[in-house]
Length: 182
Image 1 (cartoon, rainbow, N blue to C red):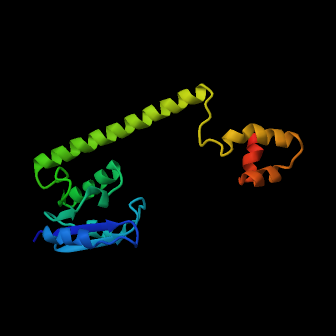
Image 2 (cartoon, rainbow, N blue to C red):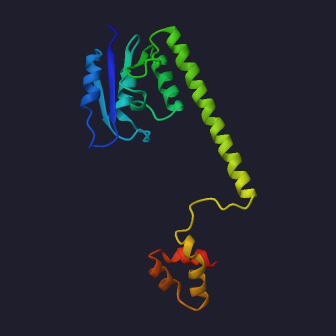
Image 3 (cartoon, rainbow, N blue to C red):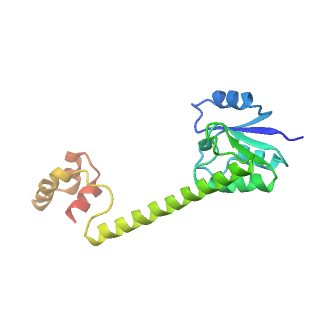
């Protein structure tokens, strides 16, 4: 007999799973797999246990997509596993994220493709912008902490003051002054 399995996840111990569990139970989840771990980690033990348990016509239910995955690729990989098991997927807050009907599966696939395409466009544009900036002589990265006082620090070093003394007066690491004076 098909079952509805819920999956609830929070990032830290300071957060509570209670609201997610209540929503999943209200949506007829018979069993809820709970996890307290960052979605950035690849080892989501309870999610893996849930995916291994899914059978034909079962449903994986979450309150929101971000509780399940952190990227479109993660979503597509998880949905691939769900589909291989003959099961379906549904998100309570994201009604378009539902594979229980053919039409909704199509919508989810198309939207996932658009998201992946947009991510690649952003990556390409960002890379091109960085390359143009570097070619124009722009220094990439964070600005020096001493920007308003760089000339003064250089003059002090040229006058013979030690790098450590200069760094201490500005409350920065001596490497910052070394880079400035290099």
